Image 1 (cartoon, rainbow, N blue to C red):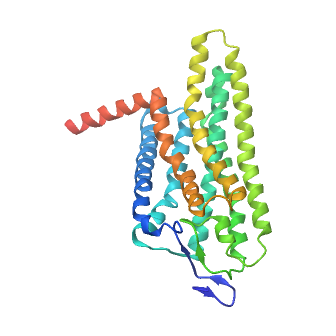
Image 2 (cartoon, one colour; image 1 turned 60 degrees about the vertical axis):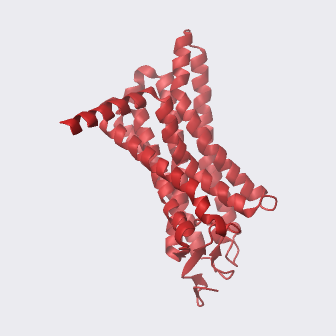
Image 3 (tube, one colour; image 1 turned 90 degrees about the horizontal axis):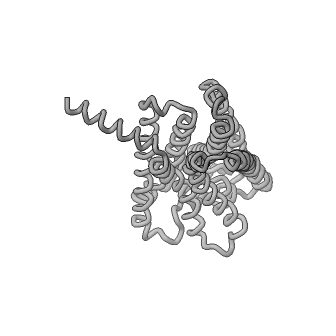
Length: 319
């Protein structure tokens, strides 16, 4: 085995093969991913900057949005630059420990994004069902505590993946047919028993995505009941409009994620492998690309904040 430590069957490095069978078109394939990554970086960094500098956006809803943007930016940055190096320069080698670190951040930040979307659903629930107590319930202290709890949950549930992979014997080569280090893609190179990896992966997905989707569903069920009981049609429309961006973010995040999850487990033999790789990359890159656009288009306060910030910066430059 190339790059293997014969005494421990632990490889010194893995080779990320990119998209198998489409190596000749890697350069062309990289173009849409590059554009999406640029949009994701500019959009999410722009939202974080806007929310931090605009006092009118210093509210719980926008703090959670800034946390989502930070998670999205970190998530796509954890794998896209490395993927582009594979496509552009054929730099396919990745150190074994670096591979585990990349896998940790990808899965941890994916779990974090799901948790932040759940917190944003909680924010909308409090804002619509308890509008007079909104600021007193979601204080800065509460926001920090629940954000840290979500972060700690993501870290604690992801760390076991690294230990499970670290102690596996690798005797099936070190060629990973993927653009980044994914838990199961690496585990399949082992000649040991990976049943516990499969079981723990399912448990982690159910505990994170299942729990978060349950909380989101319960929040919106209560929100819908509260909005329907409003006497004014304008009040109902305004209440629903405050949830539109968040609902779009949920769809953008969970639909590709679940599609990727189910096709990998139930469509392994019917769907070509390069299609799996495309789906896996899109499900990580699509939410960071589209979320800033959705919130920029759908949220009036953000549009107004962008205009104020733009003219403020322009007036400073003209002085």
